[in-house]
Image (cartoon, rainbow, N blue to C red; front, side, top):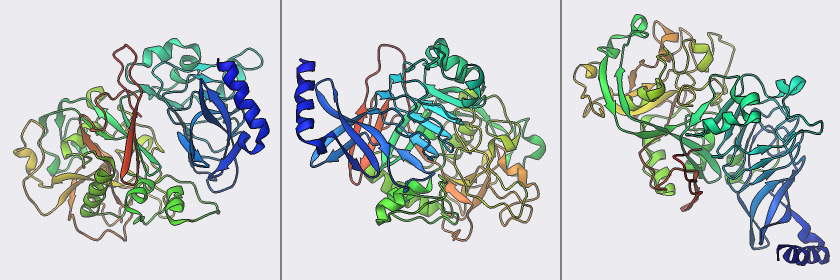
Length: 497
C-alpha cells in the first residue's frame, strides 16, 4: 500500500515539477512520504539573512495553503553554512549525511526528541555544546571507512570539552552507546542530564530547567565567608519546593518576540527583530545576547505579556530559589561561583579591561551542576523579593519570599563589568560573582544607560501546558498557542528542552 501511494505521489510530482520542492524564508524543501503522510525535508539554505545566526528549523511549513510537517534534513543541507547555533524540532526524524559538516562557526546544536537516525558525518564540526532530547540515543551511522565519526584523527572534531546534555534518567542509555559515550560523554565532567521543558514564543525558543526542591544553607557559607558582605549573614537553613528556572537569562530575541522592542544598550543580532519589522537582507554579528538595561518594573510588564501569550504563570525567581539553583540544587558540589571555584570558567566578564566591550552572549561559559548558564556574571538578574540587608536574621525556613515591603528589589549574579570604577561595583568587584552575593536597587530606576540589568524566568512546578514533562514543547504565536507532547516510553524518564 505504501509503495502504491508513493508511486501515485511520484507521478503527481513529475506531472507538476514545481511540486517537487519549494523555498520559504530562505530554506528549501522537498516533498517526501512519511508513512502515508506527505511531508517535507529541508534540503538547503539560501540567502544571507541568518548569516552567523541562530537557525531554528520550523516543525511545520505552509505552502500554497497546505501545511507540511518537517520530518528530515537532507544530505549536506547545511554543509559549510555559517550558523552559530541550530535548533532541530521534535518532528524531524532523520539527519542526512554531512548535513552540518564543516560549519566553521557552529558551536551549539539542539537535537529534537524525534530524531532517531543521524547519518555519517552529519555533525562533523567543532562544537561547544550538543543538547539531545531523545530519550533513546539516536543511531549514528558509520562513516565511509567503517569507523564512527570521531575515531582517531577525527576525534578533535568533537572537541574534548564539548558539553552534552541529555534527558533526565537517560544518561545510562547514552553511556551504553559506543558513539555517544566515547566521543561526547567521557571527556567533559560538565556533561549531565537536564530535566525541564521547552517553549517557543513567536519563533523564539527558550528552556526552563526543573529544580528539585530540598534543604540548603543560604548565605555566607564557608566557601563564601572570606569575601561575604554583612547582608549575606547569617548563613541559615532554607527548604524549597520544586520549581523551574530559565536555563539562560532572558535573551534580547525573546524580549523582542514578546514586547516588540529591544531596550538593550548592547544589541546583538536578532533574526526575530527582522521578522517583526520587515527587515530583509544584511549581515549581523550573530550574538544571542541577554536583554539588559531593564528595571524591575520593565521585567514585570514583560512577564505579564509573556503569560498572556503562553497561558503559563512565569515569574521572577525568589531570592532563595535563585541562590539554590546557582549553587546547583541537589547536585551542588559546593562551588564558590555557580559551577566552578574559578570565576573565569563560568562568568562572562570584562576581566578588568576598559577596552573590551560586550556582547553579552548567553551560555558562552561552562554551565553549573544543573545545566544553568551565567548565574555568575554576564548581567545582574532581578529577583522577585524586596531587599532588606537584615532579612536573613528573620527569614522563614520554608519557601521564603522576602520582606513584605521595601524600597529596593533584590539583584543577583553580578554584571559583566568587573572594573573597580564601574558605577555599580564595590570594593571587591570579582566578589559579585559568588553564589551568595546580593544587592538591592530601586525597582523603577532608570537603567537605560547601563547594560547591566536583566532577568531570568521562574515557573512553579508544574507548567500549565503539560501534565507530563516528557518531551514537551510549548509553541506560541501571537495569542494562539499549542502544546505538542511525545508520550514517555515505559520508563521513569522525565524530560526537558
